[in-house]
Image 1 (cartoon, helix red, strand yellow):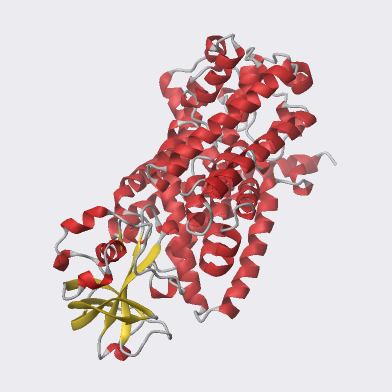
Image 2 (cartoon, chains in turn orange, red; image 1 turned 180 degrees about the vertical axis):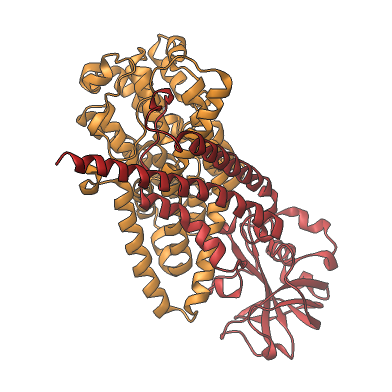
Length: 349
Length: 257
């Protein structure tokens, strides 16, 4: 109930989307010859197109998350991780195949892994890589873009950035400088997040004993429903904004913004941060911009967004110290930005 | 003072139960919406038919989750309070705002008649020879069999003059801009790879003496032969129509590259 007065990502997003839609709608009514019902019909088709194509992946993601919640024990995984820091970082990059989680699901898993003794840098790499490098995102990106530059680029850039940031942490920081005390000390079953968390954020999984199969499946499906309402909001608000831009802003304006090799990257990164759309479905939003924006900026959207956005930043604050969160935002931001701009300037797509 | 919190708690509980039922109804409603889209063929207005199976997955998962949610509610929330102990997972607080946001697609999908993108959605950017849609397979298709997409691809790969005299028979909707020459229009389609988010408008220029009588957006079958002519200031293949017939909107309004 205290949430009424608090800043929440959904509230901020609601305001941004509502303002954008209103401004753009009034501009469009003045600017084009189409009447309101035609515009509404086109807008609705564009919005539902993104929604219908994306929603199966969001649902699969929430079911996977529910199953992990109930059946997979992070304890075992923490023990398999290699001791060598470089190898361990490599393992962290591909752990998303064991935990197909999006950027909101990954934070509780990482925190849990830390309490099980996962090396701090491996957790950082996993945190940044898993939301993009996992089977569900692989398929959704393939469906949206086919096999090509965007699909390959997304996975290579994510792996490079996640490993680089992980190695920075491995060699340049001590765990006690990075993690909050609650994450450092193993707290079994406790919910150390407490009031630091904004409304509606998923709490740490309780360290419950393994459940019987039927009960576990039931609980997974119920949890999937809860998470659908959590994640679905971001998808719907993001899709509304994307559809509004496609329908209402003239192609010339979008091209002016989207063809600049540097400005396009910054715009798409800002959009990724603000929209906070789940990584399982962000490829479909990116698709709405692919016609007008540079490939480098689309890749920046698809690599930076899964690592950092408004809602994941709020969750980071529950696990890491403030200064660390700043690094966790700035390092991926600058690296994906540089890579995106470099690609725009040097590679002809 | 002591009675107020108790009353509030009861009230909160009732609100929560109502919200959980609305949540369940939304899940089942979305499932039914997907089933309806598949059954009515409206799905083709939104996504590439190649990915229709994804909507089957969505329909099944929505109905499954909705069903479990309903059973869960019937069993645990009808006679609760005392048996909280056996629940080892707790529901998240669902707000009216969340419910409203999730209801948006359902409202748009049911209240606004489902329509594919048409002539009004083009707004000036239509391609007669799209580079991004290039594909060499076009050459295997006989000229009379080619659709708008095949022609647009072919134009991109060959000299304009090489199409002189080739016969064509294409289906598309009418697209006219004020800047088009007299008796000119385009028979247009949208090409989509994934869903309408990546829709690209493409079209074949047509010359027909009765073009001014055509309505923007109506579906036609146009037959004729190509010859190079001036269109929008370029010398490109223009279909000289010999027959133009009104047709029903095709089952798949979009073309799939």
